[in-house]
Image (cartoon, rainbow, N blue to C red; front, side):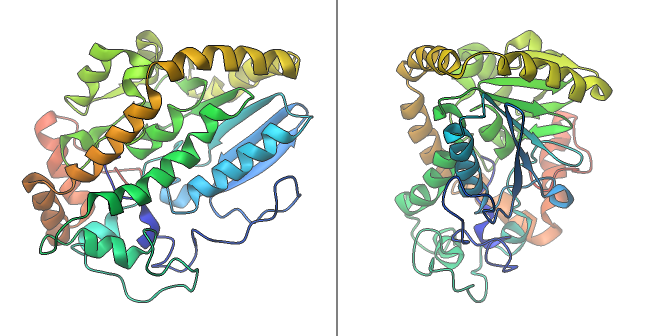
Length: 336
C-alpha cells in the first residue's frame, strides 16, 4: 500500500469507524456497516463502498465490513454473483493517511473504548512504532496490515464469482482490493495504479505479478505509473472497459449473464481456476509484500517524505512526489 491503514485517522481519531464496531451475525438483515452498503437484487449481491466524501478511503472497518458482506453473499442461496463498486467519483482512493503523515507519526490523543487499546490495532501503538526516534518492530506493523489483506482477500476466497466495477480511480490501497476480484470491468478513463511505489509504499496484497505477469507488473511498479481503463484491458488487468456513461449498463449485462449460471457450476469453475492461481504463490507474495510495505515507510526516503508531509501537508507532499514523473495534479482521492 502506499500507506498505512487509517485506523488512527477515521477509526479512532474521529471516533466514527471503530475496527471493533458491532456487527450482526452473518445472514441477518441489518449488520451495522460503516464503510459500505449491501443489498441483493435478483441473483446479484451488490457491495458498494459508501464513503464518497473521502474517495471511499479505506478505514479500519473496511476489511471487516467487506469480509462480512462477502460471507453473507457466499451463504445466500439466492446469490449467484457478487458485484463490488464504489459511490461518488471513484472506486477507492486508498488509505486516508493525511492526518497520520501530517502529524509526524505522533500518537493521537484518546481512545474510543473499542477494546483495541494496547493491541496492534491501537493507533497509538502504531504511531509510536512509526516514530523515527524509536526502534521499529516490523512484526507489529505486519500484525496490523496482514489483517487488512485477509479482509480484502475474502473476494478471492469467496466461492462465488466477484466482479469489480471500477470508475474514476482505483489507486494505491484501492488496487489491493480490486486485484483480489475475479473480474475487473472499468470505465475507459478510469485510473488504476500504485503511485506510492515512488516513495512510502509497496502493494501489500502482492497481486500485481499474478494478474499482469512479471514484466508488466514491474513496468508499472518501477515507475508508479497508472493505467487508464482501455490500457488495463490491453494489458490483461481488466476484462472489459466501456465509456463512463455506459459502464453501469454494460456491467449489468455482464453480471446478468454470469447470474444465469447454476451456482454449483460457478463455484466449481472458480475453485478449479483458483487452484492454479493460488499454486503460483499468492500467499507468499502477500506475506513478503506486506513486510516490505512496512519497511518502505522506514527508509531514509520514507522518513523524509513523512517529515515533508508534516511540514507542507500530505497532498502537497504527494504532488511534489509525482511532479518529476509529469503526472502531478491535485489529488481527487482521499489518499494516495
